[in-house]
Image 1 (cartoon, one colour):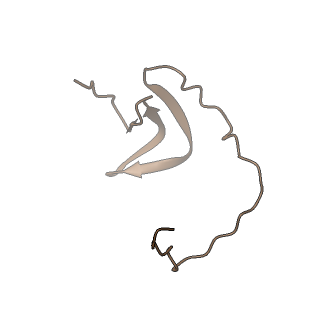
Image 2 (image 1 turned 90 degrees about the vertical axis):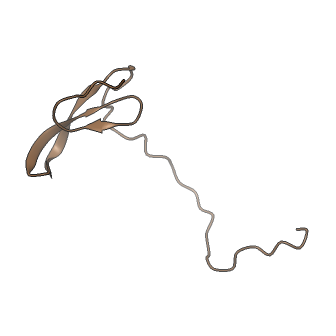
Length: 69
């Protein structure tokens, strides 16, 4: 290992399992914003939301969508 000492501060176990496919599919397969109904009410800055706009570039927008320049 060329004199490199591995980290001694943690332990891990190799196991087996399956990957959760992440259901249900929200249908966000486009390059535009898609409205997703939340399974709960979410309060942000004294406003309560039942849905969020999710963009394919990784942003979430609560309330009115803002145009990106």
